[in-house]
Length: 126
Image 1 (tube, one colour):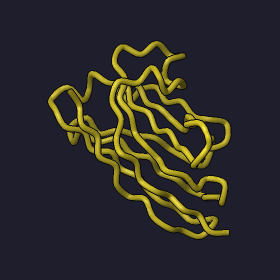
Image 2 (spheres, one colour):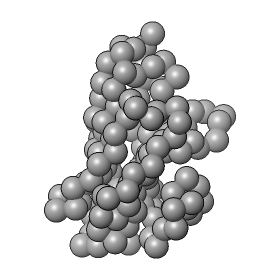
Image 3 (spheres, helix red, strand yellow):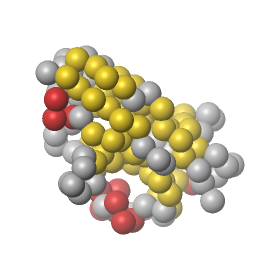
Image 4 (cartoon, rainbow, N blue to C red):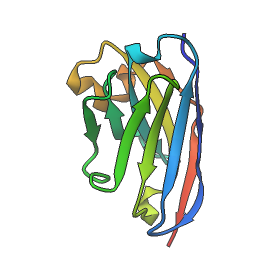
């Protein structure tokens, strides 16, 4: 069992930056691939970024590539999402998720993940 708690969301102007954190409980954090997803009301959950168990491989949605950076610190049981050059269309609830034994293609699919955080709101004003 893994519990995930996100933090770092808030209100920011377009062009600004935020860093989201996702703290995981348990001693097996390094066994999980980690992902960030976002969702707006009435819309499907959207893949944002993911990182492999060791941190050696990262994956991004085209819409955030070059602006967002995912990283993890296995000693701190934490995964981060650095978001720069934010746009109004980045506004959403951002959730982190943990996945066991991920094939590369699994990272992009929400239903493949085993555990989810409660989410944190990011609002970008234009």
